[in-house]
Amino acid sequence: MKEFLIYKSLKIFAINVGVFMVLVIIAEVIFGNWVFGPKFGFLNIPRNAKYYYNVDGLYDNGGRPIIYRRDHLGLRGNYDDLTKIDILTIGGSTTNQLYIDERETWQHHLKTTFSASGRNVTIVNAGVDGQSTRGHVAIFDRWLAQIKGLKVKYVLAYVGVNDIHVEYAELGDQMQSNEQLRRIRHFILNNSSLYNLFRTIRGYYRAKSAKLIHGAKPRKIVKWIEVQPFNTRVAYPFEYAQRLKDYKYRLQKLIKRIRRFGSTPIIVTQHASVYRIRDKKVYFPMNASKQEKQWSYQLVRSFNNMSMHVCKSYKAICIDLARDLVFHPDDYYDHVHNTPNGTYKIAQYLYIQLKTLFQ
Figure 1 (tube, helix red, strand yellow):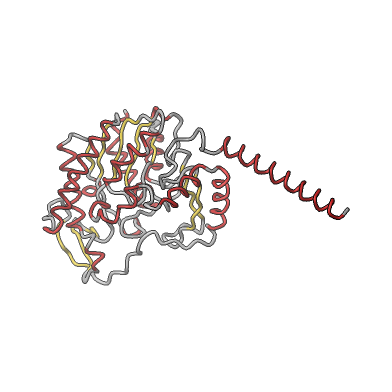
Figure 2 (cartoon, helix red, strand yellow; figure 1 turned 180 degrees about the horizontal axis):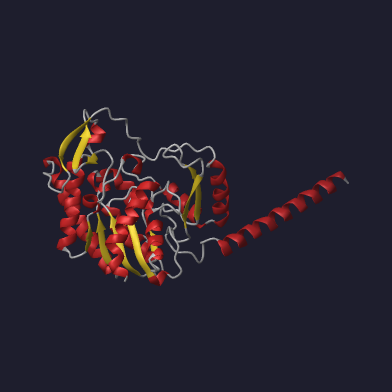
């Protein structure tokens, strides 16, 4: 009798487990991306992602967690029709803005500014952390071309900074791990609906205790020295001549690829926060560290000049943000990434430059 009860209990347990597994499989097939989703699950681009981050370690956000979302296609931003995207932004982490809330990205501010002027402009963010122009070219074949029906009027490339030290961008440019197990893991995580639910819940609770460091916090500078007037005339460092030449080739390739995608390219230059601009003069830290010297105004401006040279040569839309816009210390939370103050300034500047395209 005892053995019969044990057998019966095990049988009931096995049936329940079996039913549960069948329901899990049905749920994954219906709500996951295994069958009907796009075929780029091996890429390390989050899909169906909703993350909560406490960013007070980076900038003052009043203790409120920010929300970071990527949809089922890996895109940030709202849109109604994939065939009617006005602007698609590409770039590295300064475009992606991992630690900026959905309502505070420069793309969102730009969209709302257009809306306030009576124009509905759809802006979608396809930025990928750590990418250089090498990766920006690759995303068209590996990712964007796989999105059925995607049609974009303008592709805005916010570029330059990651190309200065392009060797650090290798992983971001590949968009997938060199390790087979990691690629399989990304495939599972990007396709599983149940894991997506789990990480959303987990992210909310983790946000309460998260301590984030996106980049090195700028050290407190005791003394700044004037290095040159704030203009575009710089002599590029000789040791970066080959890097600039390689960047020129990659940017040419990117502009051509954007056009083959059926879009008009917009090239936008970038600043770094290591130098300061006051009264139309550029200042740099006295006794700058080796890392800080890698972001000198002379070096950043050299790459920006190359961006504008290539852009004009290929008759793309050229926006020299780094020439026209001056940031302040509270516009950054590290050497290159903007706070919400900075993203708002970027949006207002870009609106002025782009508004004639949507009249």
